Image (cartoon, rainbow, N blue to C red; front, side):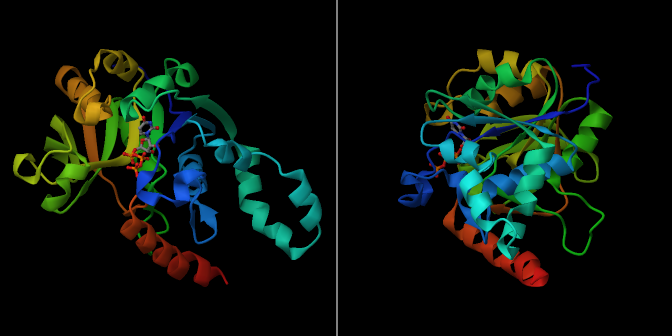
Length: 286
Ligand code: UTP
């Protein structure tokens, strides 16, 4: 894995059903749920842009058209509010639309996150790329404005090590069944050479409490590994299983990123994020 290319593209696998948010997600993508007044999807795209990426690839599924519409003009609405103070509310999303390119592909069957990423091969080609799961919402550390959000931190490490990079977080041992768990050798403070990975282990089977969260930088060889990966936990093709093989044969680095993550795929995490953003962003800017 010696490619020396820069990371220009980000994949957003957004095909999942979001069953934990039913009934809200019956006819609306989970990624369009807002934290205060901004959809999770926009936070994710902004984080990629902060990391210097402008090509955004979405792996969508049926019922996810609202995501594509969100990154397009809405002439009727824009005409209606033009010239009023309300038009300012569209400034941020208009900037994102102006600065980014947005590519959409369908994952026809929900065969797992690994399969969703493999579906994105047609968008990515043979270059390194970022992956962001929008329901993991990452914020920079409070009061450290010089520190960027997680993806920019991962890309900095990719530029140094030129291998697959995953973001990790220490979680309560009781929660290991919801995550991919790594073991590894610490090579710099908070940075690990991954030696093993296991998807959703029972707490008693988990080697550590270091959990992979929804931020990855992957080299294009991952597609070859994913093609060889058999369905694992829950009958899905797991990215963790493919990365485990990369760790064995090449190299995967895990980083405890600076900042905070909210698990907005779960109701408690979503409420926590809402309170955080209301307090630190929305109220602060009023
Ligand atoms: P989750 O495990 O969170 O599943 O998927 P989900 O369907 O989104 O949510 P719940 O558990 O039913 O509430 C992790 C990520 O992988 C994507 C999802 O969209 C989510 O971003 N994914 C998962 C796909 O794109 N395709 C799949 O086949 C599976």
